[in-house]
Image (cartoon, one colour):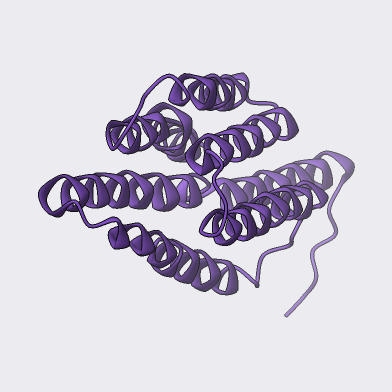
Length: 191
């Protein structure tokens, strides 16, 4: 097979096409983590709220520890599947942001079982901050605003009492994570 010599214009077009292909691959399913965590959190919130309302047994709160099983498993599987792709600096930064917020949220959730502090407020605040930072890092204002809504929702959750706070918590994940997840996937389809 004979190698073809490219002129300057063809070389630039090839480089441009390679960059576009890489960007398209990176954007593909970018909203998946937001959707996994958002829908799982809404479903778990409503399930725990329902079980608490029907039984009055506060042991149902332990179900929160099952929340990460599905979204974390699928996220890890999806990340390993994409190992072939080049991981950019921005990908690593976003990964670090969510690792810090996720681990902090988990540890605070564990600590909340022995103490009395508003854990739903804290988790909403952390997830809102993570979403805001993600939006700022990837320069998508809609994602940053969605995170801001999550932060404001955290403070709003302090005004809701009893098991109804669980519903408020779940509903807050719709504008904070589910809508941004669909938006990111729509943007990736446009590429």
